[in-house]
Amino acid sequence: MRVLFIGDIVGKSGRNALFEHLPFLKEKYSYDLLIVNGENSAHGKGITKKIYESFIKAGVDCVTLGNHAFSKDTIYSFIEDADKLIRPANMNPQDIGKPVLLLEYEGCKVGIFNIYGSVFMDNVSANPFKTMEELISKYPCDIRIVDFHGEATSEKYAFMHYFKKDVQMIVGTHTHIQTADEAIHGNCAFICDVGMTGAYESVLGRDTYEVINMFYNETTSRYTVSENAGMLCGVVVDIDLQNRKAVRIERIQIKP
Ligand SMILES: [Fe+2]
Ligand SMILES: [Fe+2]
Image 1 (cartoon, helix red, strand yellow):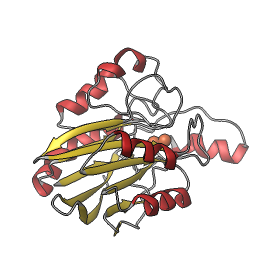
Image 2 (cartoon, protein in one colour):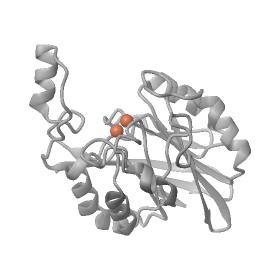
Image 3 (spheres, helix red, strand yellow):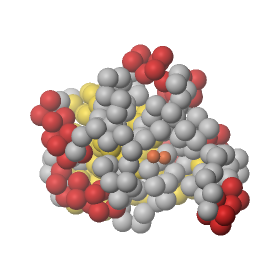
């Protein structure tokens, strides 16, 4: 099974880059499963029903979220009906949405999970390691894929080493900067952060000069999303279903 995971889609530049490059990526990689992180897809913060539906129409099999999951109030009106949308398991609020998507592929039970880092993150509701253990016993699966949405590289590495036997793919999201450490550890394909899909000439997808002003003048900043041309960041992972083991990971970065 081949999985394509595309990192945090930021605003219009990110959405445009996704839609522009998907046909080429489908032809080049012939992936079986497409997962995107959509936490920044609606003008940098959150996701709307219309944007979620546009991802599904483009062939996305699962949309994951992060700290901006509930930034748009309208999420409360559609998250329960959005079959392919998952939210971080151990993040508040706890009473809405689901943390796992279960799929069937060639006779295998595949679980896609969204876990939230506890270091430098807001609204953490529980320990990520213990939450993942609970999800593993609650949802028996042959293949497990995790979007670990977190800031600290140390926490992402510790999580990967703890779960590398039972989880076939762990992709870090949230920092928006792609790391060059993609590798197979145990049964697991891992990258500390997959990077963002958003404006290339920007600061993490935000307007460059606004962020410079914030740091230089030591002020707080608004959240203006850059509309510069988008880059796309992702990974493609091959999983051997029989041996329940990831066998290959390739990093993707398409600049405008
Ligand atoms: Fe993000
Ligand atoms: Fe985030």
